[in-house]
Image 1: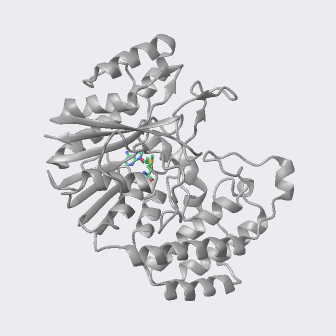
Image 2 (image 1 turned 90 degrees about the vertical axis):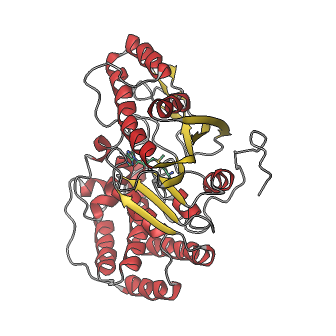
Image 3 (image 1 turned 120 degrees about the vertical axis):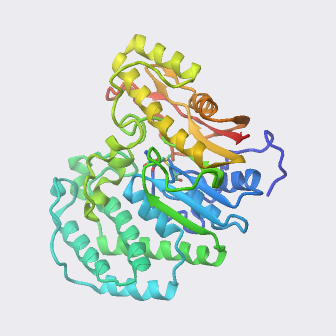
Length: 407
Ligand SMILES: C[S@@+](CC[C@H](N)C(=O)[O-])C[C@H]1O[C@@H](n2cnc3c(N)ncnc32)[C@H](O)[C@@H]1O
């Protein structure tokens, strides 16, 4: 680990292996680079016994916390049930021989109990693919050990994505072109086996390196009263959403097909329930952030509806800040990895607004902002801030890692 010379350290991690341990077992939108969580824990968690990630996504911070000696408890919350499942599996050490045995049972299976019947299933999957997925699912559901069953459900979820008729490598749901669809005849069972073997390799590495940290991921909204005691958290390491899911990163859409296959309900409404899911009715700003007020005013001059959408995200975020302030210990550090998006041509300084919001709700000292150039495609570097098809503006090429200390 490099010397603690903040400001001189490079945060880009261009050559870093981001799939070590269990980090690579399932794709997830806007994943945090493990090396960032690792370094934040190293720099700001020297005295930390407890860590929280209120927007844990696929659980990167929790995995990293569980690889340290000093962090005793690591809590994570996410409203997306798929994020919860992935985080749970990534932080639960499992016996590889048992996994091996169950995998060969799954691969040998030939029958399914019933075919799933969710809306548009034939649009997203070819009939043969549906049958093979149903065989795998039936076999996984026979596994008694919950940890092992969840492990294979995560492998199954990744398989669902890869064998579906969706366009490769995109987080939003778009169907392949008719031309590509003709050529699309995936070997479902071999794809599942490939993913399972790769994940077992990651699990093997994780089991060796994992420490005794208790990891507690929960399927829960950070806007609600958190099931944590006041002043119980020494360190927050998180990358929150930067705006509502519909116009930034569609976590719900990304997870929909897998969740439908896994029999979750209320899947279609997930994006509406995440931060900023419902537009504000009014443009009255009660949040004490001068930067937010200025930005909303400028967007409203161009488009009142978009201004309300942006405001609603920050109103929801404010509910989280109240909770986070309640659970943070004095002298504890709050580390947020954020991107600054552009709406209607106006750049929104998310890091500055969030810093002001924390200061408005509690006593926080601003420590520093580390800048990170985004070198790969984990983040959408292009989006359509006007929501018009084809209109693309470059956004979020830098990540801002801001650090506050509760005083
Ligand atoms: C940028 S992602 C986190 C990625 C994560 N750091 C990782 O490495 O995978 C933001 C997460 O916030 C979650 N989220 C949005 N609204 C939420 C809420 N109200 N409560 C908890 N989580 C929420 C989304 O589901 C998404 O998983």
